[in-house]
Image 1 (tube, rainbow, N blue to C red):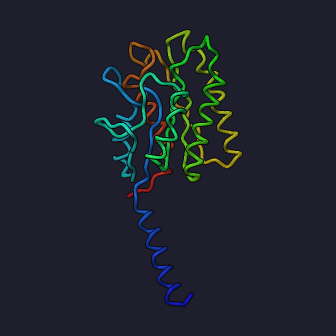
Image 2: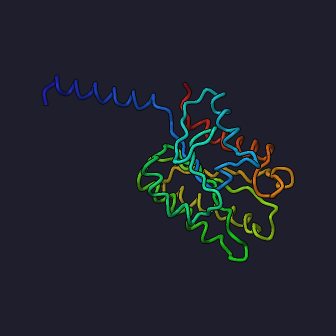
Image 3: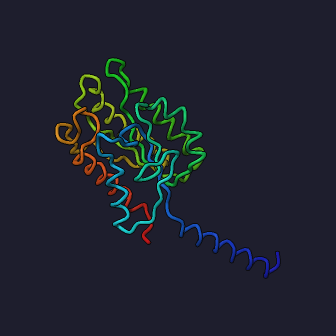
Length: 220
């Protein structure tokens, strides 16, 4: 290759990376109704999105659904098995740089669902990573619930999600555990159904997500 051609190639390569660097990081919020939001409770995205903007961070929420706050991939009433069934299509259409996963509800303690949820979650992450090895996964320990005994399995699930994160870190996955359950008290942080977040609960969730996202998002 001639010197002139080499220089042209280098210029275009540098230009490509400069343009790529200026693009805002894309975020896909994946989960159930707690991610989707609703009229009867406060969704963490209602607080997180304005908080990110206030910090002057460069980002863009993407996903197949959209409300007044942002795009997202929250599916009310669905569990990890459903998310596993759709994630390949969803992520191929919305290949975000960062994926926030809060999933673990919509199961019953009597069915001993913990191992299945963890397996589904690992497969979901694997499918995402197969499409984009550079993706960053923020995996939440899910918020606790007063709807018992249905959701009595959640503390055990959160222990296993921590173990899953450690296993995937050893495999060099770009993954971080976000302790949304830490400091979350369903007695004051959920609405009357004892499942969905109140304003105080949504603020606690948002603060945890925000702390995890700040170092990942490029400042303007």
